[in-house]
Image (cartoon, rainbow, N blue to C red; front, side, top):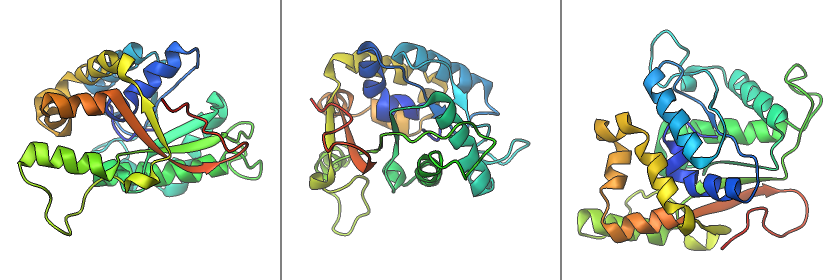
Length: 242
């Protein structure tokens, strides 16, 4: 589950492409974009590249206009909409951002909170009884970054290490439970990122990411990192590392 069109490519593009090629059925729920036809078209192209089906829009916008704003929607309502997608799609695993929203974006943080609540609620027949047959995913994974990678990228962009006490994305390296090698799918991940042409032209975080030095860009394209938040079943990882 992702907050915006383009996040699926940035944070999980390699994972989606890899598992699609290995025969898994994948899908992406996107919280915002209901008011932006161009971004939805770009999302469609990205998902086609990654083999992740058609867009599943939660129906909110990130802007304050005629469509309900994601962060201002009633929490229970948003959770219920995600529960409906989980029960319909019946995923083995669910992926969203870490508790800091990967890099502190408030809509990412909110998407994390909504997803965590929905994954838990989806398995209870007492909750959201009109949202379909209960389904409990086997695992929940949080897309994140090892702190060592964040520091290396900071150094590459700004030329100096972060100041002591600087708030940084990611988690300590030892909290990473799964690193996926997605190198063979890096070109597809990059193509999916570039499919979001309006975001590239806007000059936001995607533009900055694509402008990283080649070695730092390659590091992010070839690897995706996760922290397992909860897990049912045997102790082996539900995502196959390396």
